[in-house]
Image (cartoon, rainbow, N blue to C red; front, side):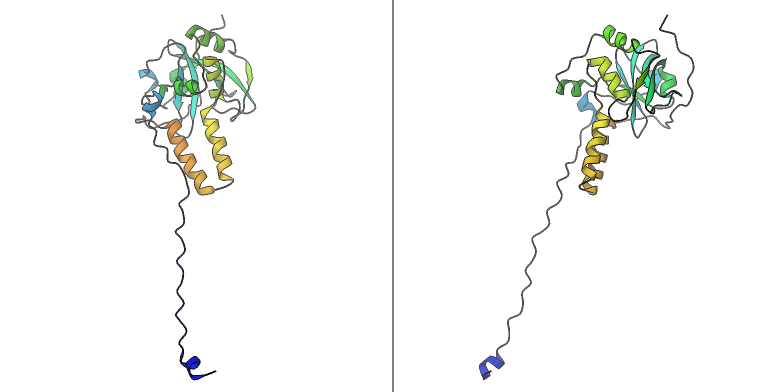
Length: 218
């Protein structure tokens, strides 16, 4: 090694900056309920519904669904003990909306926007009620994702059933398998879109008992 080679100072190593990591593409949904033609939740006694309307009952983490048939009564799908979420078998019953809702808020949610997206038109109110009454007091299939109370009321109203809540749940489960953070964000935003309201009464509770309702089978 010669003198020049011994005195040559090796150049300092320059670290190469890594490119910035791209943020995960998680869409934020900021849709207000007014965009779907929805109002705030009310107490059951204050709801101004018309026969054939779909009534959404806010349970905070999910919604229960019913068809309004007049005089404060609704038809809905529930468990054998009147619970919102049944097991494999449920029953179609008529009850006072105030009994079904308890302290939970209610509002009219006729699913106008989702129905329009599916090219569906609402049936006449008398037909909606007739469809519901045809199932009254009968045991029906129940599945939280494929055959819930929301599926039944939309089927009675439009002739074809679906559940926006179930769609959100399935979408989140698929997303969670790939990316937990994105799935969590999607769940929060999606539930906000489907269930959010500007005002909700409180406190809320799920009723465990119901009083008798008129017998529409006579």
